[in-house]
Amino acid sequence: MNFLLHRHGWGNDEELSREWLSGDGSDRIFCRVRRSDGSTLLAVLPPLDNPNGLKEARAVYHIGSHLFNSGVAVPECYGYDEESGIVLCEDLGDRLLHKALPDCHGEEKIKLYQKAIQALVQLQVKGREQFNPDWCWDTIHYDQKLMEQRESEYFRDAFCRDFLGIRDFVPGLALEFKQLAARAGAEPADYLMHRDFQSRNLMLAEGRVRIIDFQGARFGPLGYDLASLLLDPYAALDFDLCNELKSYYITTVSDHIPLDPHSFNEGYYYLFLQRNLQILGAFAYLSQQKGKVFFKDYLRPAFVALAEHLATEPGKSFPCLRALLDECFPLLEQYL
Image 1: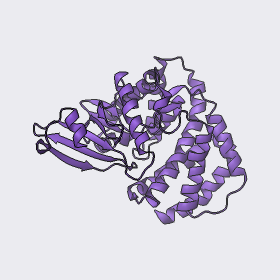
Image 2: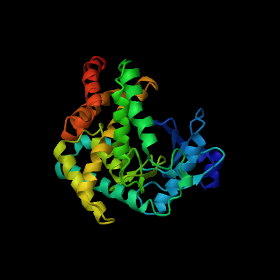
Image 3: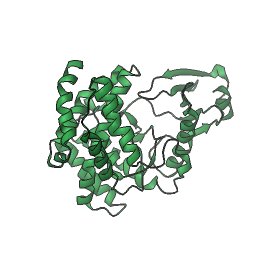
Image 4: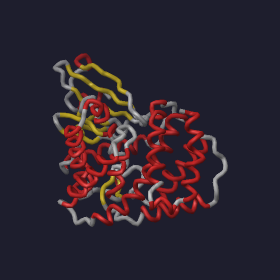
């Protein structure tokens, strides 16, 4: 790391102090580097035991540089070393949107989320312009295969089987997962997608909402990232506020591209379901398999959101999934 700091004019070792920071679900390593004059930057190091770490680091730098140059509210990338995978970038501080929410109410909260939505729309619409698919380290598109394997089946395996201990699943469940993915996959998917757009990946700096953890960006539908923001178990937004913010999103994105609100809302239902399944799978895996117990506290609100969403009229198309949730609920109560 020192050689990269020196290359970018950050002085001698004795002039610098380092503060090692923890991430959430990421295995990457974060270090805040501080000069004697108080200025800081963030060094991001790939995990040592992850074979995809260098690919992910490359995506951080190239996608981040593209988004910043496109006017999207991400931190500026200062430098990158391809061999080590170290990225130097702007330090946005420590104020996550999630941390600000307990002291934020009424119009103040609405305005913060409106800023987040404005930043999201810029990422989705401006970010896709001249976006190079070669920068993607994981997949280029959010497609039906990803929905089934990394969202619905992830929910079944990591949450239902491994976390709750359920071993038998009715055959109709797999068919419902395919039907869900097919319906969600029917949405226009040529926009840039963050895929984890939630309050712990949004920071408040200099009066702006800034986006981090964008290295998983790929082409996908508009509604998924909005669902991530409004479903967000960390924030637990109430129903009326979610509807108000969804309307604000539709108005905002319509200023940039043609959008039929009715069609968007229809597709949003299924993208919301996909995201909800992904959250439960990921939080169960991270808390049980990776030992990150922080995530366990948010399983119940994510589960309640899924049950409420499936209890609506469109949810009747998924009777096997609804029956599975009935089986899950008493087991989840024992664990939490």
